[in-house]
Length: 420
Image (cartoon, rainbow, N blue to C red; front, top):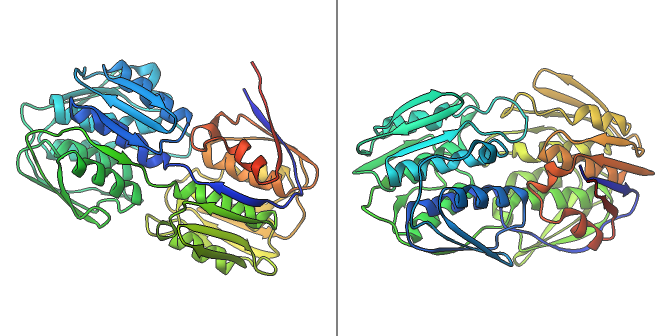
């Protein structure tokens, strides 16, 4: 497995282009299953998760071609069962179930894999499918859904940790081809859900309220092909912004969407980081000394759980005590022990991490446990004295396009060690 070798202590300077959003492009790719007509998706990031989704769609019968950052998908004939060996690699693959159910009135999908960051049940997805009239069974590790007809319905998709992003996307896709009107209450409000809704509407769907807790879908008889550009990745944007602050550099984030990052920008400014809007771009640098800041992860538009680990890495460098509370996933502090190997002083108390910051970090070998933990360890390595080796970076390749190349472009001393 590949690893990163990082020689820290170099401030990042320059410009970096923000790629398309991983969490938007995967359900958008899945949504092409809803029509036999060709679809074009632009600003698609080169990620292992995108490659896996392309393989899943091809296995289901789609024609998938990639040229640059543009993917063309045509699903003339589709089968209703997804291969276990592909689905198990990526949790986002569960989002093929909604479009398969909508188009074929049946779907058989393996329970998915992905990062190990706590329980992420699919019960809310299934609850939504049942509300549309589907019969659900789980046998042999597969979820099976079938219905003679799908009928619009009012449903509540709130869960223990708030709304479900993939669940909202999945049910929304199935409902586009249901009879009548579907109303999803406690729908996820994330920009990625809005982007999917925009793509579906371009295909001929009738969806209103996306981005609010109440989404209304009026079913149509058929959908057609569409051409769509994916929104920029707000988590990648936040990661490079935090890396700039951690290294005391100055970085311009090209094509970022500040309106998707209010909570992150607010916390960075509270922590002594200057974030300036420059047209469609963001410029990030320190504004004096770093200051401690408390963070609680919440559903959108609160502070994203996907930026919690990166913010924790920044707080280890900040004098004082910061309290970081995780309200979305119960096992998302696996990076704490690895940050401690670099010299961080962090204690876990229930859902909170108490970070006693300000001590210099020193390089050491560390092991990535999930996608965002990998990013946090890279940030810490960039700021640490000496050399840090981040192992198992296949996690980071799932969600960051060419992160080592982009960081080298900003002056970082980082190289990929490829292992057979």
